[in-house]
Image (tube, rainbow, N blue to C red):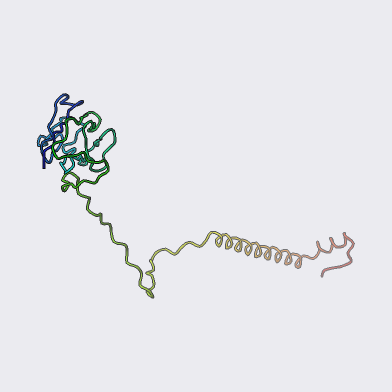
Length: 208
């Protein structure tokens, strides 16, 4: 496979004006010293992006960076080909332009074509599944539910009110019976006032 004649020119960032030849099948871009293109900028992740040479040219993909990779102001959501004149932006502060020409035997990769890529090494593995406490065992059919031992439940408020009314009515009835019995006993033992009252109102009735 012919090596591309493309270059990346730093237009904005810590190495403004410097150009990097795209002369390897795999080129990494990041803040870490082991990257092929090192850009010491806080907006650039340690492993930020990767360029891979395919049969039709280079494609670029983001390696799970914090601030994202943009091509012509469109954020990368997957691998996308680069062509002369494209603008690459890493985060908010580093801007690279693609210049040069394609090598012999290479053609521009059409936008939207799905390139064949090597396995990605920058994307973090998915988190392990979380385990929660198992649900309580279901009650077997036919087995009565355990009865909790404790204070008996309080009677409903309406029942308490009815009990109070009933007790109050019974008390009033007993008190009335006592008063009536006392009055009857008194009148039985002292009929004089009753006879005088009956004569005053014109009733001809005499209690003995």
